[in-house]
Amino acid sequence: MAENPTDRPESPDVKRIRHLVRLMKVYDLTAIDIQEAGTKIRLRRRGADVPVVQAVGPVAFAQAPAAAALPAAPATPPPAAAPVGLIIESPMVGTFYTASSPSSPPFVVAGGAIRPETTVCVIEAMKVFTDIPAGVAGTILEVLAKNGQAVEFGQPLFRVNPA
Image 1 (cartoon, rainbow, N blue to C red):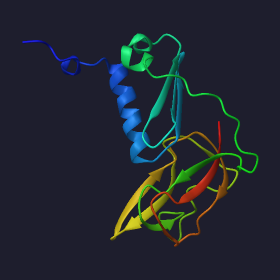
Image 2 (spheres, rainbow, N blue to C red; image 1 turned 45 degrees about the vertical axis):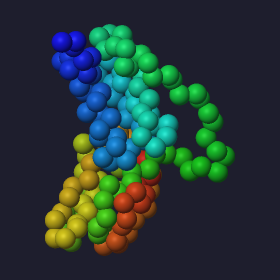
Image 3 (cartoon, rainbow, N blue to C red; image 1 turned 180 degrees about the vertical axis):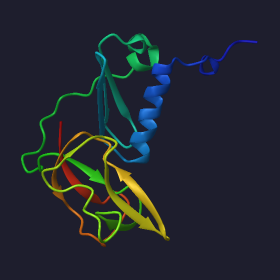
């Protein structure tokens, strides 16, 4: 019986890229940059659900056919009227809260530094409170939603200057 190429076990690096692509879809991210131990991974979404993968450094998966088959995105200048920074969007419908309780300080403020795992807000839906991670490292430029405001899926919540 012929072996199906999709049945072969994947390397941990390919599994990691697949996991990052899934996270991009779940959190509707357009970009992820990771750099650790001389390895740099950059994922960018060109269209609806097509990620672009670039890897630089001593990485075994750089020679993998799946990663090598993806062409690099052409460099296009941003529109002149586009605001500076990345947008963190709401991953769900619910009520936006800047802090875990009314007496607590906000998770982040304009000018504050964030890391990908930093909780930037909480969204409550049907009495369930969900911590929303930044997903990107950088500095908060602007909080775009008001505390207690109802938000929709994909609504901009924060503008971030990426690190």
